Length: 134
Image (cartoon, rainbow, N blue to C red; front, side, top):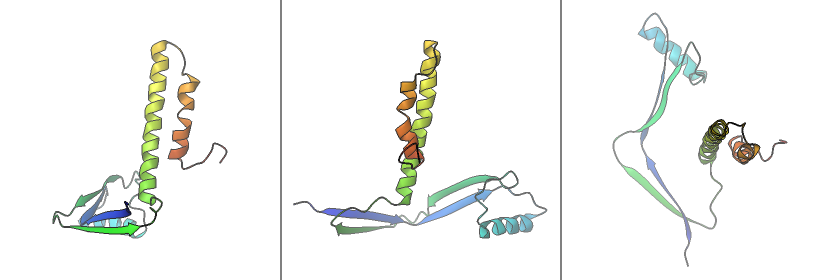
C-alpha cells in the first residue's frame, strides 16, 4: 500500500533588492535605503524611490538539504502557493479579456458576454473571493 510523503528541499539563496535613490553621496543614499528598509517602505515602488529589482538567487554552493516526512494527509498549501495560484489566475483573466476583445473586434461586433462570463471564476480566484457578493 502506498503512503503519503511530504518531500522538501532547501537551497541557500541571496535576496537582492535594488531601488533608485537620489542623494548627495553614496553614504546618504545608503542611509536612505536602510531607513526605508527598517520602516518596511523599501518595496513601495514610489516615484522618489522606484523599485528596480526584487529577486532571489541561489548562492551557488549547490548544497541541497532534502527532507522526507511520512504524513497521513497533505496539509493545505501555504501562502506562497496560494499567492502563486492567484497570480496565475489573474494572468489567465487578462489573457481571456484580451482574447475576448480581439474576437469581438475580428467579428466586427462587440464582446460576447459568454466570453467574459467564463472569466468570472478565474477573477474570483485571483481576488481570493468565493462569490461576487463578497
